[in-house]
Every structure is written in structure tokens, then in C-alpha cells.
Length: 162
Image (cartoon, rainbow, N blue to C red; front, side):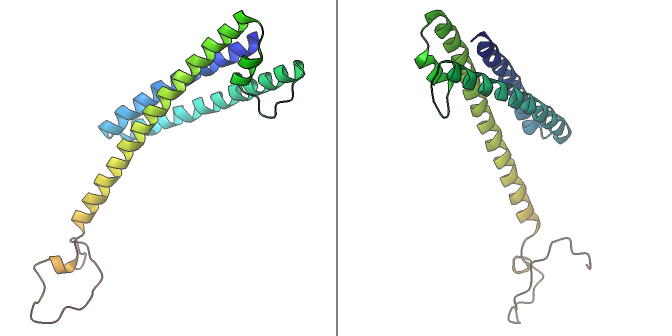
């Protein structure tokens, strides 16, 4: 049980680091600093790999505990273990660590949701800017209004033949 508690504590610490990186990403997105954002994403990927390793250890420990207790749960969770535990001290300690991990993950999800909204807003701005820079020919004042208009493909204002 102590190993499981340590694994959950390690997961909590790693997720806190990931939350810090997510906050840093928000600042780089706001500032439009792509170079720093890319480096932050590299750091994030490395941290996610660490989290995956510790998560595998946590899964193995949970499965070992279920087997040692003689239970047959196909996908055991920490909640399942907490429901089955008899020792109140171990149960309380494990529950505190699990709640802490859940809180950090919830904060991380909210931060990543904010980052996604900021990126979507930035993309909308880029698309709007591109649309403004490439109007259709019928919106330009250089057309001959006496002749019937024939459909021509859209061209950029910055026509290379001009």
C-alpha cells in the first residue's frame, strides 16, 4: 500500500509540473512567442512520458493489490481499492493522495481548455486576416461594369503579374 501511495504522490507531483507548463504555454500563446511555445511543448512531451511510466507502475500496483486480496475486478481503480480497504489509517492516507491528484488533474484540464480556446481564437484571427487580404475580384474597383461579369477564380491583391 505504501508503494501505491508513493506512486500516486509521484503522479500528483508530475501533474503539478504539467500544470505549471500549461500555465507557461498560456503565457507564450498570449504573447505570440512561437519559439518559446515550441520549447515548452518539447518539455511537456518529456513530462508526459514520465507520467505514462509512473501510471504503468500505478496500474501494476493496483492489479497486484487486487490479486493479493483474492478479488477479481477486471479494471480495478483507486476508488475500488478504497471501498475494499479495512485499515482506516491506510485508507485515509490513500484517499488524501487520490483527492490531491484529482484536484491537480481538474486544474490541468481547465488550464488546457483555456489554452485550446486561446489557440482557436488565434486561428480565427489568422483566417479573418487572410480573408481580408484576399478579396474576390468583384469587390475590387478595377472591373469593367459594361461587360457582363464572367466568373474568374479569386486572386490575391498582390498579383505577381501586376
